[in-house]
Image (tube, one colour):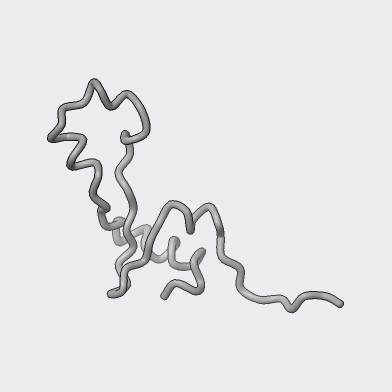
Length: 69
């Protein structure tokens, strides 16, 4: 028996982005994986926060996350 067709979540997008309760799409900063010893603590602290995705990209991200909004 075949499984029913439907919307599928793009898993690569689901791992990179988070949709908040108000509908904003959030992403993490780049530059936080390695070589952290060479970065100033203030910069490392700023990289820790999530930041909102640009409005031009929000639509495309939400299209790939059908069950998040």
